[in-house]
Every structure is written in structure tokens, then in C-alpha cells.
Image (tube, rainbow, N blue to C red):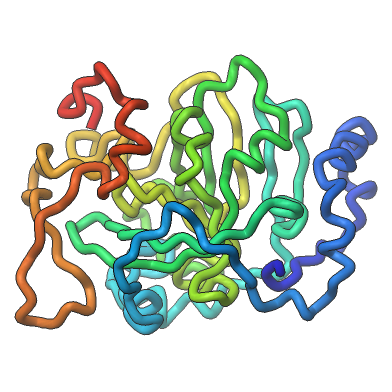
Length: 307
């Protein structure tokens, strides 16, 4: 089943050039049956993933009450308090750049026909804390393949919605809004990289990035951009928000790497959210423990330089 419906106010033919509209029809051919299923699709039914960890996930309260989401404030509790104001229906995502079939799609159209899998990841964020999160989503590679990746596409750029009237953090110049992220094309096509639309078998909560967000489990959490409205395939490395803000602290790659310290703290250990006040820190695992699936992508690279 799919997440809740996001129906645009206008017909696609009202806003889309004819040649793009015809390409769109090819892109979403698998969507008809899914869209016909109606409101009963609100709950997510997920398939188990081979990439899921056997560690117990954090509680729903942990996952939804301790968040980094600066669009709603810099405090960890700010997103849960303020994100309810974000309207997530209707919602569309534009896919453009070096693709054969550019267009603007509802969330259902974007993921229609792709296996919706549950993947339980150890998910890290900026300050060396971690959670185990049961994300539900689809492989980003499936979306990109259906859009038709052109040979010149070397990177994928992502952009978050810009709505300062609903996202109070965007009224502050603390970051260069809207939030932007990027991946190299091989990272984007890796089967671990997903577009998540839910967690714990339910549609994505607003404070966790509703209605659709990126999850890249071998990278620090700030790489997993939320509330996505644009996915662009490009030839050159795209600007990314934290790298623009503090390039000496946040590199483009941002892989989990305990051997490379953040200038202001060690990344060799981490704290598990929900483990209790007296729980000790634990060793951080390189590539978040997914080295067998991703390390080959960085063979020969100086990961202290390309951090």
C-alpha cells in the first residue's frame, strides 16, 4: 500500500508542455492501479529488506521527539512542536535536469510500482548521536531509472520546500534557504539509498520529513534531506547547505567515519538516543556498518580529504 494521497488542484495538462506530459505518461504507467485503490492505502504495508539491521529499533516517541530539522528551529524538540503547521497535501516533486522524462509528480506517482520496503537503519546525525529507525520507502535508483538517467549525469541534487510561513526556522538567516543536498550518481543508485515515505508502518510524520525524504544510512544524518520538492540530475557537484555554511566542518561526502574528527568534537564514539542517562558511549562503525556495500565506491580516495 501507499502513503496518503496528494492530489494537485490542477490537471497535469493544464501546467505541463505536451511533450513532457507524454513522457510523464510513460513514467507513471504503473500508477493507475495504485491511485485507484483510494483512501484504504493510507497505511503502509512494507516488505522486509535484506539490508535491515537485527538491532531493536528506537521507540516511536524517541524517533519523533528528538530531531534535527532547522526549518522548524534549532532545538531537538522544536520540530515536534512546530512541524504540524506544514501542509503536506497536496505535494509534488519536480524531477529535472539530465533526465529523459522530466516532469512534476505527486508522491504516489513518483513511487508507484516500486517495492515499498521497510529498512531498519542505525541513523546518525550531526552531533554523534544515533537511533535505529524503521524507515519505509523505495530505492531512489528505481525513481531515477524510470526518469531516464542521461550519460552526462554525475550527481543528483535535492531541494527542500521553501515555506517560511509554515516553517518558522526559514525566517531566520541561520542557513542559506532552501535546504539543499547532493549525492554522487553511484551513491544515489546504491540500493541502500532510499526515498522514505513512512516509518513504523505509518505515513511519515512531519517532524521526520513528511511526505518524502532521503535516507542515506552510511552518511551522517544531515545528508538525508527532508520534505523534498526537487530532484535534479546534474553534471557538476551541486552546492549543499552544510558544506556551504561551514566547509571546514562539513564535507560534501559526509560519510560516517570515526577516523576523521569533526573540528569541534570526536566522531570516534556515539551516544544512542533512548539508552538512558547512564548508558556509555559506543564505538562508531565506519560507514555505519555498511562498508561491505559501499566502501568500493571510495576506493583510492583520501577520505580525510574527501570527508
